[in-house]
Length: 430
Image 1: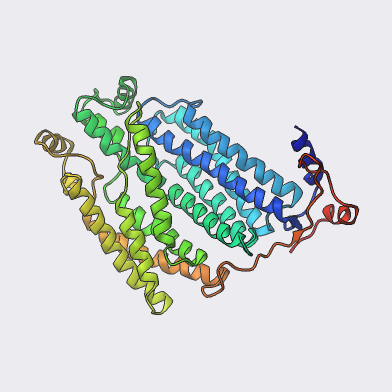
Image 2: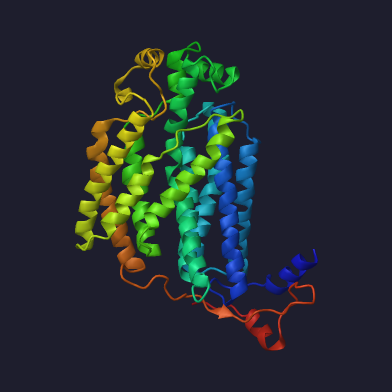
């Protein structure tokens, strides 16, 4: 309490965004964002598995864990807003909008479930608002880290590692809705084994929603209601451009590989936690590793920036679909699952085939490639007009770092020296 009291007395004064901030406070606030996003990540990952196990529960442990992260994020936004410390005006506005959308989406989602029942799909409007708001919030945090985190001396490595971590959070958040398919196919396989992951109450509820008994058709409607072209097209055309922007912003040649590597490693870590407990696991998307390496290799090509978007879209799409096919074959899953009815899926399973990979509509390669060509060029144009394509990485910080406050014998904050007191209570904009 002594430390908290000293912290509040020292820093809790009104100021405008972009206010001169002690370096130690800027570092503390931005690292705390990593903590908030970690809680949200753990909660959202558990939440997907939770809803393939039990009926919705507003006070489920997964929701509580996510709420802890959201609470920290809201607290940070309020602190940035009131004090003006640790964030420039534009970054803060983006954080405020994203947090506001997420908070608004919460009660909308609750109402949606009260009115429409289960609504398991990750693609419902209320769920889109939840991870859409989170994406906007993370975008503000990324922008603020890029411009405001110290990057001189020993901080340069922290600047890069923190930015890589933030882009991994962003990638996970945007890849999140594909969990519907990754968990859904394993749910169907568990039903065929006669040991469904979902509790009987959940299966009965899901079947009743479509007016059927608990049978194969009801399980398919519950676990795999999404068209098989959505998974690869969303991953390639929407998620890969985030890796392009991350590569431009971080400036390290293996940025995309590091981001997807961190995400796949995280999925590998939580897989046994789910598999060897009572919770359903999902398919780990190892195929993304090939996508990350291919993207990093394409960026090294010495060609015109926008020509690179065309070449890169073709190469990454081809490698992505090839890696998807390879993971399907290696997992002993039939490559034509997307063309099979649920009864044919059961026949394939009972014939000894595995169902360990998401059904893919392979003809969607044209849609994914064309979409990636447009979105790759789009994020390149965005980067060129905002941060520049050839500016140094890391850039010089735009935030002005103020003097450090005094500390007492126990290391707690003890206010300001007289010479710094006036500056600490003055609002300044960059």
